[in-house]
Every structure is written in C-alpha cells, then in structure tokens.
Image 1 (cartoon, rainbow, N blue to C red):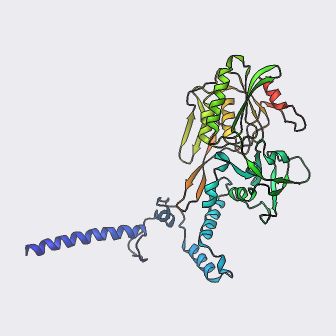
Image 2 (cartoon, helix red, strand yellow):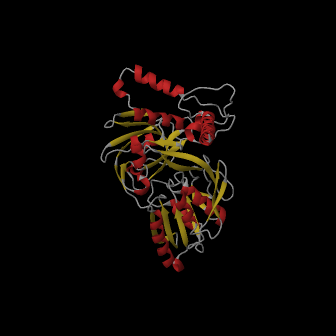
Image 3 (cartoon, rainbow, N blue to C red):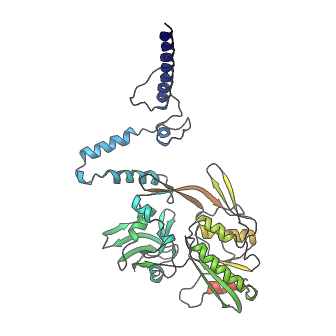
Amino acid sequence: MKLSYIRNIIVSLLLFVLGMVVGSRYVQGTLPINFRIPFIAQDKQTTAMAKLTGVPQPADKQEVDFDVFWEAWAFLERDYLEPDKIEADKMVNGAIKGMTASLEDPYTIYLPPTDNKTSGENLNGKFYGVGIELGYIEQTLAVIAPLDGSPAAAAGLEAGDLILHVKDERKGIDEDTTDWSLDEAVSKIRGERGTEVTFEIYREGEADTQEISIIRDEIVMDAVTLEIKNIAGKRVAHLRVSKFGGQTQDQWDEAVRKILAEKNNLAGIALDFRNNPGGYFDTSIDLASDFIDNDVVVTEKGKYSKRDYKSTGRARLKDIPLVVLVNRGSASAAEIVAGALRDDLGAPLVGEKTFGKGTVQDRRELSNGGGLHITIGRWLLPGGEWIHDEGIPVDVEVEGNRDTEEDEVLIRAVEEL
C-alpha cells in the first residue's frame, strides 16, 4: 500500500514536469510536431525570427514565414531546367547575399568562405591586382584611393572616379557594375599577375566617360614611410601613412623613434594621409594617441549605446608642430585621425576635402566559414560632426598637380607649420 502511494506521487511529479516541458516548448514553437491548442495563446514575442536567432523579437515585429523560402527552394530543385546547376551551398550563399543587399548599405556585406578567407590580404599581406581601394559614391562603385606605386596610380586612376563598367577577356567579364556588391567587385577586379582589366570610368567635371586599361601586378606597399628633408626652407619630417593595416603600428613606432632622435632639428611634422583608404579602427586610435595627450579621439554611436574612445596617453609627438595632408582618397580611419587632430589640437588640414566614410563595421564569423561585415554604428569627430558622404573640409585647399614633379600640396602644407 505504501509503495503504491509513493509510486503515485512519483508518477504525478513526472507528469507535472513533463507537462511543464511540453507547455514551454509549445509556447516556444519548438515541438517536433506542429499542432495548435486553441485555448492556449502563444507568446507574441516568439516569432520565427526569434526561433532562428535565439533573440526575442518585439511584440510588434512581423512574423517571418520561412515556409515560403523552402517552398521556393523546392520548386527550383523540382522544376529548374538544368539540375546540375542546383548547388545547395551556392543557393545558401546567394540567399544571404540577397538578405544583406536588401539593407541597401554597401558596407554591410556577406563574404562566402573563399572570399572571407582572403578578405584581409590588402591589409596584412601581398596580393595581385591593380591597387585600388573600392567604395561607393551615391551607391555607385568608386575608387576611394589608388595605392601609391600601384598599377592603378600609374595608369591615371584617381580618387573619386566612378567605375561604371569592367571588362576582362581572360575572366569572361564584360559587365556594368550597377548591382555589384563590394566583395564581388574586389573578386572580379583582382586577378593573376600580368593580366589586363579595363575600366570605364566617369570623372567629375568631365563630359564623357573614358576607358582605362591596367595590367595587374603584385601589390606590396609599406604602410608608413618617413623622409626628413628640407622643404620650403624648413627641415621637416614628411610622415606618410598609406593604410591602417597589420604592419602599420610597427612601422609607425620605428618612424616615431627616428623623428624623436631628430626632434631638436625639426620645424615640424607633415603628416600625410593622402590616398589612405583607412583600415583597422584600433590602429587609428593608437596613432592619434601619439599627438593627443588625454582627450577623445572619436565617438562611436551604436544602435543602443554611445562610446568615447580616448587617447592612450603616450603623446610622444605632442610638442612638435604639426600639419595634416588629406585629399579625396583619405577615408575612414584616416579621417578619424585627421579630424581628431583638427578638433583636439587645431592642426590645419591642407589639400582637398576627404572622402566621407563615417560608419563602423564589425566582422562576424559564420559557421560555414563565411563572414558578415555589419555596420554597427556611426563615428563622430570630437566636435560631434558626422562626416559620412560629406567628408572633412580642409583649412587650406590645394589641388595637387600631376604634371609637375614638385609636390605642391606638401610645399603649401609646410608653409603652414
């Protein structure tokens, strides 16, 4: 009798626990079978998107019907004329690309596994191509900056050129760039050393487009170069930063050591960010910190929060007069440093208005080896200015002349010291 009583209690407890589990999974919509109990209301916050991401959705969030996705997939697999072209991995990659493209943000992109693996080459290693940093101007593929000493620079491509069409006979490409994502553009423009690619470009102020053909080569460049020389009757350190990449900090530190050794013999530093397309955000903070003692370098304003990034306090170069050179090819991290030096120190900017990229991207690695570059915030200059699509205006406007050997912008900048 006693055993029967204990057994009933245990069974009742098990049934109670089972009921709790089933009820919870019903509300979450994760039961292995699909049925609905009319008198139990499901949580409005548990949408298909919530089940997919694990993140509760707002009550007013529209339910996403993923059945339509699988319905379309099934029709393609069953009815498409050439079944050999049905590749599941490519279809998944294409779906994710379409999802990111729907945001109409050219800097939020999906990189399939192969592209994701090589996406850091331009910052950390050698690669073959024409040597341009790509971006968008009013949703049109554009040259942010030709890299110094690159085939693109030698062929005459300039910052701000719009790339309307690309031809490459060897790769079978003869396409308008209208619908190209950034990763697609990089993939198609890069290629084997010694091969030719032709761009149809539009340059502001010119009536017609023009074609420029370029032979690809190995792209290798120092991130930081230093020349101590006499310019306009002054002995100055011409400190050029071409990118904010994996090698930048080490090369910067070496340049700073040389400048400090010459400090008493210098009239100042001409910090040159012309045609610098940017790169690593953290590196921009570190470089600015060698001039700014203890102040805000940049403010990141995200979806839910706002954060000030302050200088690290080294300020090894703070007592040396400074002027900053920029142009239309100065973008992103280069604009962060130039803007901070202007706002915090009053350093004059000489050259041309900068490119205007004021958003922050973060990288998310996916389980298939692919990656998402997601715009997670805006960055603001210390004065509160958001320069996206507008650029930073200069204090002294000087347009460089390609037809002369003298660097007119550098000479004018040194005069400002």
